[in-house]
Length: 324
Image 1 (cartoon, one colour):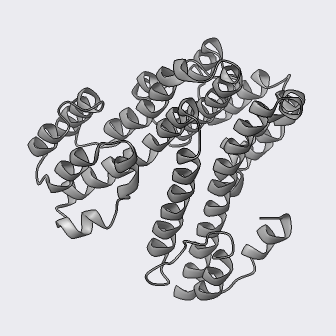
Image 2 (cartoon, rainbow, N blue to C red; image 1 turned 120 degrees about the horizontal axis):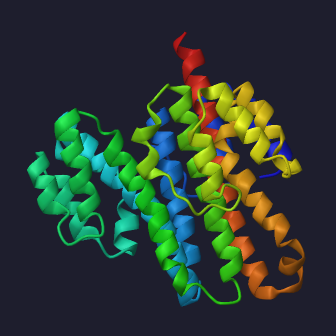
């Protein structure tokens, strides 16, 4: 999308017109009905199709990386399935909430099928046996049974996504490894910042999130995260963050945005961190064809995510306006 296209997204006042415009950029976009849930589901399904096409056309080391990226959507499926089990949803409703393709591409479809058919927590434990998720889901379910909170299980899963990326980084192409590593670190920076900000914003005890922070970001080193954890409140957190980012002039504007929260900025923050990676490697990308290729893959992945988020945000605005 061009800048003008982004501006047009905010001009639509009905979902049908927004859907017609969206099809130009997402050819597979075909919501069953003009409702938020159908918009979101169809957009992410199309996005996963795009990622699949890139994966199938990529050499093996890059396909390993892209499969690691698909774990994010398998985790989405796991969360949806477990929520459905807790809520007592029937099988059809649970299947309507997931995306089948990620687990197919990851060759774990039987596991997801077993999980979808689970009716109680003990069934979940059986379904996850011999999968990469077994121990962390068992820990999360144990905490859920003791405290009645699903937060811990969801954070275990979110952290696993990054731990898995880090683990698989050993298989990345040698020439591009530094670039890919910094991409992962930039997304870890966003993950840590998001978790810390939500914790202080909602007055949550920082000890509850300490096990889920990842001490291997690019901007925020372990000592920085420890400093942020010692903040007294949200204002103190932002002040400490301001000091840490003192040398990062391109990111200083984030501090002002955090003092006056802007949901639109927060949605694109992971892409802003990614831009910093691209800028650091700009000359290398221009001169080196392998760098150009991997850079293009990252940009497609992130740009399409941002486009989807903008479209969904406008669909929500339209729905809210029509119900008032």
